[in-house]
Image 1 (tube, rainbow over the protein chains, first blue to last red):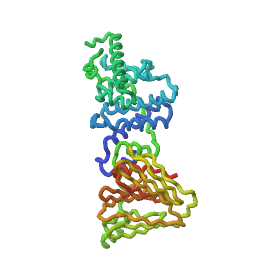
Image 2: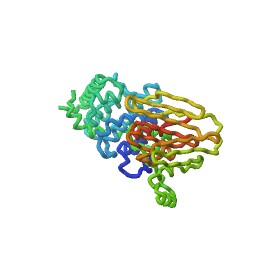
Image 3: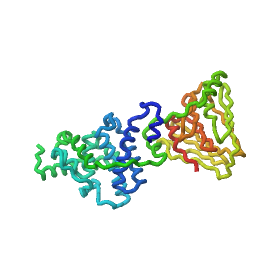
Amino acid sequence: MLIYLAMQDTSCERDRLAEIYEKYKNQMFALANSILGDVRDSEDVVHEAFVAMIPYIDRLPEEAAHPKVRAFALTLAESKALDLYRKRKRRKLVFWDDAFDENTAVPFYDPVTEGSDIAKAIANLSPSDSRLLMWRFDVGLTTKEIAKILGKKEGTVTRAITRAKERLAKELEKEGVSIK
Amino acid sequence: MIDDNIIEGYIGEARDLWLKRRETETAEHIFPEGFENKIRCAGGWKHRPATKVIASAVIAAVLVMTGVAGQLPVFEFAQNDLLDIGVSIYDESTDFSVSTDYVDNSEVKRPYFNWLPKGVVEEKRDNNTLSTFVRFKNENVELTVVVIKITHTSRNNSIVDTEDAESRLIEINGNKALMVKKNNWTVIDYFIKNYMVSLSGTLSTDDIVCIAENIVLK
């Protein structure tokens, strides 16, 4: 891709997807590889994640460096990697996505301790819960669009978002945070 | 139940914290050749123009003097280290005659397609002694791909309708390719070593380029 971009005659030929690809391909690959531990599988994940991103490019800020773009790219890569991880039953890491059925995720990353209570609680939710909330409320995807990305039924996604919100409320209640 | 407005109010900050949780050192990963093509085709990225320009100002000057400057891409396309490509330009068409001294006794390679636009399916395939003919079709568009092996014992002639057509030089996976567009018809001819590949049809130019970039001969 570096070669490809270098060969472009004008900057206008570097469309947004190419820019996003250049910026985040390595991060997406690293994230996928940390879950899968397999170079080829991780490359497939990067490919799948980019293909999944294409229909929603217009929803993202113009600037490729915007955190919303980065988060969308990484959540897609994480989601696709976990899908593959589940499919192939590779239990190389003690890390599991709840797959909408039960919240069994074991935090792989250190929980954040800074920031406001509600934001912190969202960021510390299980990967699938935080991802769903970000796609729904940050990127603004509809439940139908999320269902399409995940290959699930819309009703399943709607229920999953509801459960994510319930878990968030529970978490905040446990921490004594008022949400009124 | 937590209100959506509350989540919306904090989601930006939550996203930044989420990213912070995943902050790691990232090394450069070298993706395999052809990897970008797959994404590029899926994303509709523009195909790249040929990076080479006509190398010899002398040739260009001669062509201008002889009144065939509009055929510069054709002449550039005809420069090939392995093959002898003769070009005859007529009012209605351009004829290519391709021959070589190159000896290739290996089994003939057939084209395989790693990417096709959605809905386009292979309708017909003829595997001949030195050539392969493949036709693709969907409801509204069609594409024909012909791959011909050129060896010291065989030569090939091909005719391209270049009357009032737009000709230009592009690159397909590093190979010079001649693209001729006329109305809604696009032809792309190029060589992979001693194989001539010709794609022609009514698919969009970008789609034909992407198909060409994802052809594998084996």
